Image 1 (spheres, helix red, strand yellow):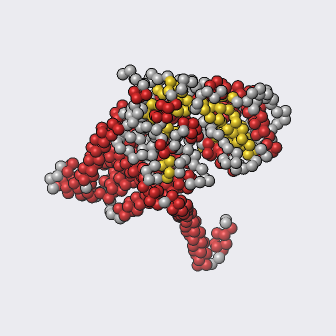
Image 2 (cartoon, chains in turn cyan, red):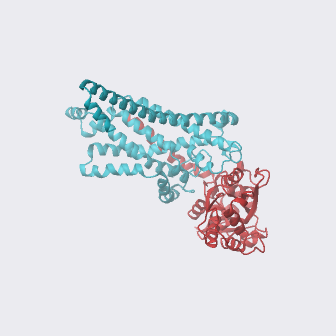
Image 3 (tube, one colour):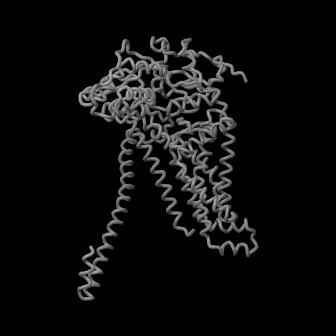
Length: 306
Length: 292
């Protein structure tokens, strides 16, 4: 490599430039190829997961029976009752519960951080949300098991492993997602929006909730939907605190089961020789489809400005 | 937009609280704890009680480990659950079944009704090549191992076991794996530690979980050196690999556990079956009165 520059120096000037140019072009092309390969690998990984899951799942669902698979509310691996009705309802209810807990707190915190927070406090709060986002979910599960479960047992009775407990823990888990994304989108709204509202006589609160929030609505919605995605796919924490009962919960005090927790608690036992393992893969495929739908919605929302 | 979201949110919350207040009334006050579908302990318990899985009162929780069930029952006054006799500790109370207390003697002589075998599966043809596996199997059949089995609260099924002698030469294999039942796992870990100290060489038996089903399939497919199962393993149906030998390590009683605040000391097999099939049952229905 070191010899080459000497050669170019001894050669006539424009020939040297040409050589340097070709070397730069080669370098550029090789880097382009490298980046393309990296991108291709990632695309291949995503496609492999999707295709593998769907290809494996479709025959299994066919064998179980599509309608039975979706509507049967008993999930008994050992008795070969593979109905994901209670799993889907459980996932939906726990997600709604998480949103009920997480969205108001998250949005109000984001408002506080974007508009009311003194600088010194912001320097504390911002890292705190990052820490909250970084805590492994199993730790949330233990927190739920040792702190929230006894509370909920006192509050609504029963075993404490129920919809209420899960909603609270999940609500806390989705906070960092909701806070950071909605705060960023609130901050991205141009200042004149706010100033204009105040100049027209609006109070600070009015300016924030009537001007800034509508302007940042797509970002706020993205935050909520991403939080929803996290709640739907959450596994480790939920498996510890939902109770894993394959029933549609009739109240907040009832235990339930989600798609993800059914996979997690069944995987250790499921036999590959019959429908047990394939059924779990089919559940994983359903989970994947739900998450893909949510990601699509987020992509559509992102087209807006803030 | 915000107002609509908040309105929906508060409606859902209100409905939820309303449900919570009403919904509790249709089930009894017994907090029934189960293991999850597929667990060896659950399979054994249901089979021994003669309960179909679809009829099972799934209760308040189906937990994925023995310790989680014990922890759950320990923290819930109205709870009932089941766990391996060997893993039951002071935090919960084990009930007598039909007047027979769950002890080693009653499990060994068969008078305690809810008992099951701990089975190990290994490839017979591997023993020639894998000297560590051969040595460990020899140890498992020895008097030293039986002593540990008894110490851990399980029931030895080997009579007049010979004393274990450490190998003369250095073993060529230094690590073997045992996978499967999480009920057998804790006992195997203790046995493996004792074995390592007796051999006096740098060898290791790695014990990991996965459940009885995993243990059986690992043994069939040769994924691990020893498969562990906490239920009866049938040669020919469960074990399809002809080279695999089944060895019963010991017997284990499944203890019926309740909270220490529960005044009951005995339960009939019939009542136990009722509790695990009928959701509406209260403790008072089977004659257990809590002092409030």
